[in-house]
Structure formats: C-alpha cells, structure tokens
Length: 325
Image 1 (cartoon, rainbow, N blue to C red):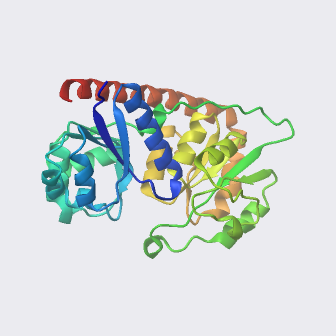
Image 2 (image 1 turned 45 degrees about the vertical axis):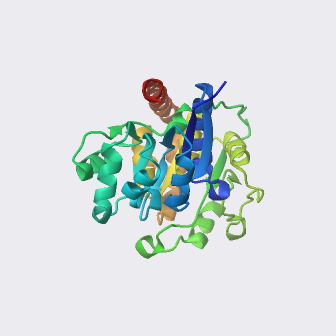
C-alpha cells in the first residue's frame, strides 16, 4: 500500500545526543501513524532540501535548538525555499531559540511561523519571542518532544554510596562566555567524596578531565551511563531532561539559556550552576543529597506533567496530518 511521505529535518551530524533522540521520537510517531519517514540533515543547502521536499507530502521540523546565533539556510531563506519546494505543507515541534537578535531575518521567520500547519515551541520564551517577531499567536508554548520518548530506568541503587555522572562540552560562544575552565572544574571534582563517572559526549572530552569517560560515544551508550547514576551534573539539555525522566536528580550547568529554561520547567532552578561557578559544585551536590526526596518528588511531578503535554502535542499533530495530507 502506498504510504504518504514525511520529510523530517533534524541535525544529524556527529550523533548529537539530543538531536538523535528528537529524531528517534518523532520518527517513531510518524511511522506508527502509517507514514513513511525520510530523515534529512537540516543544515544542508536549502536548494537540496527543496529537491527532496518536492517528492514528499509534508515537511516536519523535528525541533531542538536549530535557531541559535545562526540558523540553517532553509530557515534564513525560507520564502525562497518554500517556493522551490512547491509550497509543501509543514509543521514544527519542540523548537527553542537563542537570546539573539533575529530582526535581520524577521521576514523569513514571520512567513515560517504564520504559514505553518502547526508550530510548537519547547518553552514560553521561544513562543513569546517568535509570536512577537511574526505579529502572530501561531507559535504555541509546549514541551520538548523527547518527553514523549519511551524510556525506562533499569537502575538498582548501589548501597555503598551515590554515583555522580558528569557531562561536559565546549562552550559554543567563548567570545561571549569566555572559555570553559577545565582545570578549575577538575580541581573541584577531584575533591568530591563520591563515585564519579563521565557521561560521554559527541565531542570527546576524556583527555581534559581527571575522571574516567568512555571514549566510544554513542547516544544509547551515554543513556546507559546516565542510568547508572544517582545524580547528574550536566551541560547538555537532553542529558538533563532524560536524567530527570529516569528518576535522577540533575545539577544543570547553564552554558546556554535553554538549560536555564529547562531547569525552571523541572523545578530545580536552585540547583543551577553558571559555567564558571565551579566553586559552588560541592555545595550544590550536598544540597541535592540533603533534599533528595524533596527534589525527586518535584522532578517526578514536573516530568509527569510534561509527558502528558508531549502526548497531547503528538495527538494534535496526528489529527492535523490526518486532515491535511
């Protein structure tokens, strides 16, 4: 039987932890609804994406941080892209934007927001800013799609003590933030009186730290290590999100505003660390341990709420697709 085709745009390069699970989650829903899913790199030239889009029935932007300091040409030149793509119907889920000035791309973004079949952001800031830019209310405040990923924990508590996972990455805008102070963070982590394990990243940081990090990175491998931990000190947005969904207590490092927004959603803003707040790490860990039961309940309640919102998001998207393609 002929299946209608949905072109799924996502950042596929280097198997980024979050982008991988964004794609996996959306793809699972698309295929479960009986459509054919065609994943494609969103950073390709818009002309190439348009060629593929003309062969499909719908275009889905999977979500994540595809608009930060820069944006792919499929967005910055969206009006031209859309014409080349035969004015394909499209929608957006789980998007967030950076806190930069996008006024020079306002015409393209306004068109993108206002002509979408559905448009869901993953935080209120992104919805508010995009609606302001587009003079619209089309962007709906929702949640990250990975709240709808099938995930379960197989962790069995180690009675000998707590295990703390550490996830680091380079800073994307060192001209604004300064460089990440690896030596300072190492000095503090060396003094932590708990078992420490590195959560590998797409960009290997094992040579920069004093603790053990598995060099053979894969998203599923990193997720398995997260599941071995009780607490997770992390920079990556989706490491924090999936740790919370697996019953861990995250201590987020705010390398980017989207991390601060996620900490607010999870009810753990008081555990948030700045990228240069290495001297506060021990205090935050002790706070998390001392109030473990309290944080576990807060996180559980928030996760349940956002899992339900994610389910509702996909139900609404499915209904829209069934009517329109």
